[in-house]
Structure formats: C-alpha cells, structure tokens
Image (cartoon, rainbow, N blue to C red; front, side, top):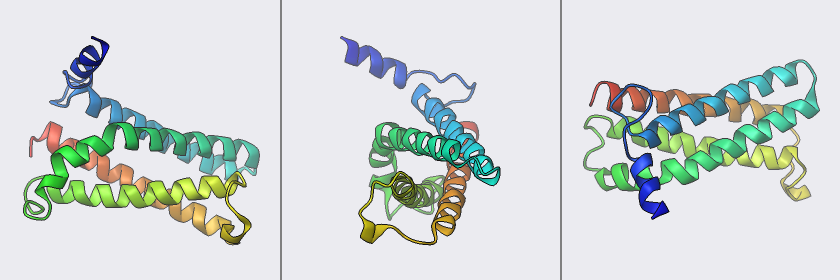
Length: 160
C-alpha cells in the first residue's frame, strides 16, 4: 500500500543526523529554503527588479504555505495542541506554541501580501502602504523561521 509506505518514510529516521523523523527534517529544509527565497526576493526589490521580486516572493509564500498546511499543521494538532494550556511551561511546548502563533500570523499576512502584489484582492482591500506590509511580513516570517529552528534544536538535538 502506497499510503503505508509513505507514512513509513515520513515518520522514519531523518536525514540531518539528529533524532528527528524525516518529516521534521523535510519541514526544516523546506522552510529554510522559503526563508532564503524571501531574502533573495527582498534583495531583488532593493535592486528594483520588481517583476523577479514578485515571482520569487510568490513562490516562497506558496512553498511555506504548502509545508505549513501539509506537514506542520498535523504535528501541531497531534503533539502541541493537546498540551495547551497545561503544559506550556514544559520543555518545548511554550516555544512551539509561540512558533505556531507567529508562523500563522506570518503565513496569513504573507499570503495576503502576495495576493495583493499579484492584484488578486478586491480594490477595497488594496492597501496603499505596500512597502510597510511587505517589510512587516518579511520580519514576521524570519521570526517564525528562527523560532522553528529553535523548536527543532530543542526537540531533536537536545531532546527537551
């Protein structure tokens, strides 16, 4: 059965040499790639290469959305949510919860900014201070990425 084999691979040993399962290593690598792409896109904007900037940012946000909804959401619901609020002060629960909240905000704002940048929102929702929204979204994305790396290290390197 393909589903069983896929489950075995996803939850089998990871490839980064830590105690993480494959799915966590994959999430870390993919979200790190999205963060790098967002940074490349930021640089393209600084170089006034706006069309390339738009395409790179759109791809980065699409990638991070895909990873968050397919790989991370299940992990959050399965491992973190049952421990809220009683276990928030234990081990990685508090940092994981903070990562989840910051990540959700980054994702929602990032998707909205990309939709706006691609003229896919109604005129009434088209904000004027686009640069401020982009910078805010980028900053929150980077904070979410840093928190995600922190969670990975706490759980799979230190075993907390």
